[in-house]
Image 1: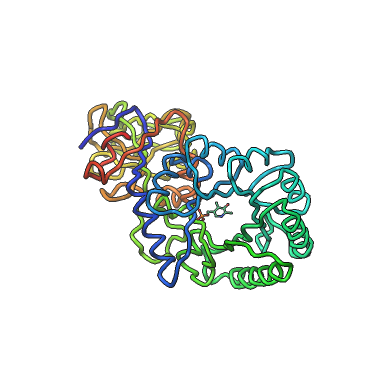
Image 2 (image 1 turned 30 degrees about the vertical axis):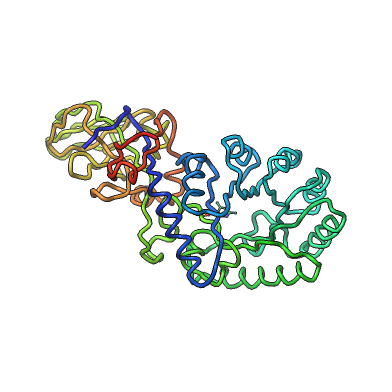
Length: 387
Ligand SMILES: *Cc1c(COP(=O)(O)O)cnc(C)c1O
């Protein structure tokens, strides 16, 4: 097995991304064509926005989705030319740059729509709030937003290409908000049509709804977390065979014996109950390892899970090696796809009381990120070829 190429690194398998995109597209298109948007905001949920975008397009993603105009422009600067939507802007942002780059923008309010229309030639999508109470036009403003959009369109100032909304609880399929939001979305579609709008795409579903709620697929689904191979609704999703794309690993710095009764790491929040050995792993909360993982999460060393002992420090963590003394440089996997028995991002999320989204998106700091392609080099070992 190849050791880590760097002291500590994030290895992203782009073959896993392609596999997931193909799987998702097949799943949602089973009963007729539904387009797939790969959501690559927040640096591709920590996986590398540009690389994931390329891999997703290659595997058949019809659209890419990002939050901000800056992210969309970065994709264009990297050479992406396909359908691309962004949806989060504060007043005064550079809609002209987005429009010039062929990026579709989203309007929540009439004011925002007017700002976008003033640029001229924008492809704009309208976002309605159907119950998340986050972005999007509240129901009482739908009619005004649709009317303004139709007027701008009739005057040739914009093309209204989409109408969309976002679920609050699609990871809980039995949550009553799901039915209510889907019904509200259908009302919005009818109102938009009555106002004279004819958007090319209407969309509501994120990953969880793509997997769990076919009635919400409409023309397109926006898949983020599932693109990266993580389960949007742990314990509920069908077993699709998604493959986690990210592995975080490091080289062991040292291992040494400690005696029964000795305290470990800051504050001595853990004491050895018996003589044991511990290892030093060169990643800490500066790398996005949650401090809450102290005395809670495990890593993989050798062929076993090794619990983190004591507090997570800024630059390092200490793990229990249960009497073994692996040499410095030994591979330590914090999390990965789970094939070898190593913890997954979901295991880390469970250990610290969060969701896998946060685990993969927050890792970074001094970790070196590299992309591999397990299909190209015929191995799923994260030590494969650097792209
Ligand atoms: C982030 C995001 C998504 C993707 O959600 P997942 O649960 O990761 O699939 C979809 N739509 C919007 C509006 C988002 O902000």
